[in-house]
Image (tube, rainbow, N blue to C red; front, side, top):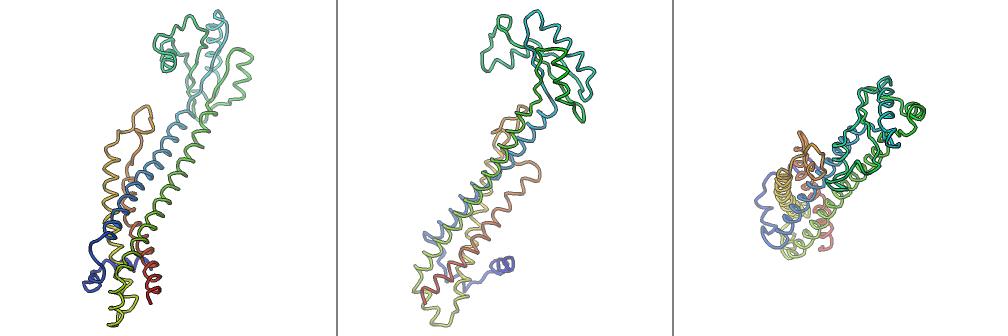
Length: 299
């Protein structure tokens, strides 16, 4: 039904077009509102997609790795490290395991303690990095073996890191979805106000049209067509501006930074193109409802 109505709107009717003024506050307000709201919707959509990709990437990376932390007296660090490596070599589900060097551990701590951290003077535990094989290892069984072979070894399978990422990604996607709904609702409200203002400003013209036999459906169609096309044009400009802004953001880097991953990938670039059509549909429905309600008031 809406598709057929939009198809009729696309066909130009010169006589009906003269019913609605082509300029004025309502004209630029409709186009500006549609453009601005669509521009914001593009970024909300990009945020939703980026948050999902980022969480998937981090979760996948953490799911393939685990860490063993060895805290023991200085003279016991080396023997326990070797014992843990020997144990891991015979553990099913582990593809590889290696002890991190002092330089690697210093690089991990550098963002918090600076580049001149004296590892030799501090009781820093030795870290062993584990890479899982498919389908993975038995974490609880490995913990029990570690407690027997190396009492100072603690396994961290990154479960406590993965779960918050999944929860955060879900909430970010929900927030982005709510933002899009609010943006589209604001667009509908502003277009309704603009249509009401235009109908009220042209009340005398509407009365004259009725006197010469014009039906309310004809008058309403003229306003609906004009406002729908204005919204479509404004939304198209807003979507294009938003896509250009997204395109100029930095590309996702190997570190997986959040802001550097904010963008569209592959077929995702087609999604913003649907926003102008959605804006036109919203404008059509909002203006149609507003037009018939206002025309009834002017009877």
